[in-house]
Length: 272
Image (cartoon, rainbow, N blue to C red; front, side, top):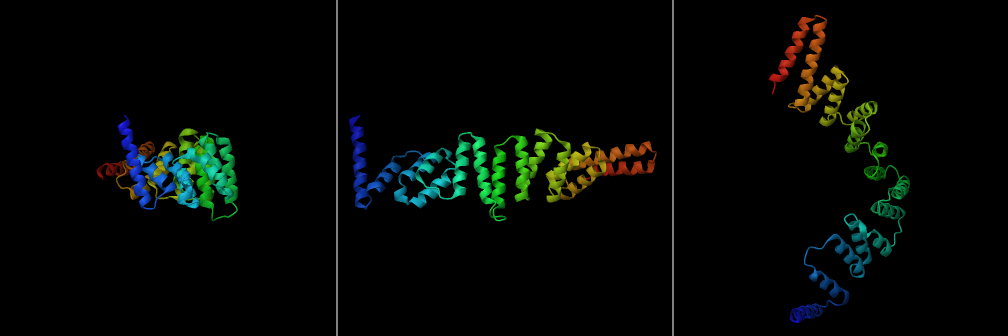
């Protein structure tokens, strides 16, 4: 009751006396008091609002830098950020507006502001190419599959070494919007860039086997076994390839070659 409340006030006045003795007063003492009152670790929102509230104390520049970084964890703070800190940089202004639109699920306007960011970055190429690619990939994350595939392809013009973008395009053309011709085209481009990538080699071997291009499938499977000698899929594909070839040879009665294929198939099951 009143006694408990009295104790709280007593402790507060004691802390104020200690703070005063140490030369801490005004806003410093307020901040100290606020921090002491917090029982749990400070959440993103509380930290953001404290930096805003006590920006004179921290220094406007330091507070702005902190709040800008904190927006990733606490996007609800965008409006407050724009209210308290002047944004003089055109790129930064458009970027914040784009993120603000995304926060409100307004993809249409967000895209407009991201495009303005890209226009600004394009003025200094190739220095900004990686940034342009990152924005395009960010937009792709929020876009429809059909739009995402175009954005990922465009991003590779600015940053051609990004493996996840190639895999993202392949996934769309394999699963979301099946297009065998486009899939093959992008698979070839991906392998050109990453010739020793096991995931891509597996895709290529499977794709060739499905198209009954057994020689190609075997070549990919062999390449795969060189990198990953215990790859079971590669062994299965090679085994199936030898057996299919043996069946074809049987029809033409080339029995000595049939033996050769069956022996090669047996070796795959013996090899560990």
